[in-house]
Amino acid sequence: MSPSPTFVPLAPTIPGPDPDTRRPRVKLPAGAGDCHAHVFGPQQQYPLSPHTGYVPPEASIDDYVRMLRTIGCERAVIVHPSAYGTDNRCTVDALRSGKFAFRGVAVIDDKTTDSELEDMHQAGVRGIRLNIKSKGSIYSIDSAPRLAERIKARGWHLQFFVDVRILPDLDKRLASLPVDIVIDHFGHIDAADGVSAPGFQTLLRLARHERCWFKLIGPYRLSRQSPMFPDVSPFARALVAAAPDRCVWGTDWPHPNTGFMPNDGDLADILLDWIPDKALRRRVLVNNPARLYDFD
Image (cartoon, rainbow, N blue to C red):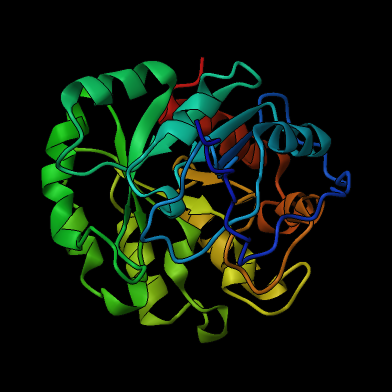
């Protein structure tokens, strides 16, 4: 009998995170949550989608937990990455690992069964993500009503990876959905455009709706003013002022597909500029995630 072929993983096409996380100056409150991160690999156990636009290096659950403990987070949300398509096994297995207080956001399609949704719910999934920005996405904005009907009985939310600059009527299209909605990455605005730009004004109109939430994540995707991205601060402050009970924060670890690799200690310290008030910072880091993600 000939031996089985040896598995050869694909070489990464993007860098991994900074492994030397700096302990931040800010002390995060007890129960603080990182509400947006991903885990990857190993490839032999979790094959990448044939349609992935990138090959990530391994970013293990142990590496992620080590980073979380360094910056002072006690809860975390793992968001299923596009590299795996609708195969949620890597994310769900991480949720079930018992290594941290986790919740998750999955990616589904019309082939996902109700029993699979229930299995994901038991694992800790509390929302699904619609990527309507990336090339080759299986979703469009028109997918939202159908998906909302599938998840509303479980109390899940819809998270949108979307460029608000090309969807000026996004607020009108999402306001009537029967579930909470979450806009991540500041809606992919460009900090250079300023807070008066039409795209950000769309976000502020969305903030008037009680079911719309915002993830304050990924300043390095909006700005080139590394490492602290001061030009993103006016946007973060404006969203927190408009929706103080509906903003959450995240690191976006391990920062896939970015031209600048941040240190997660710096990302934590940016909170001192984004949310200077300690009580309000606790609301964004602790109280709001507990409600949105059903943390105990």
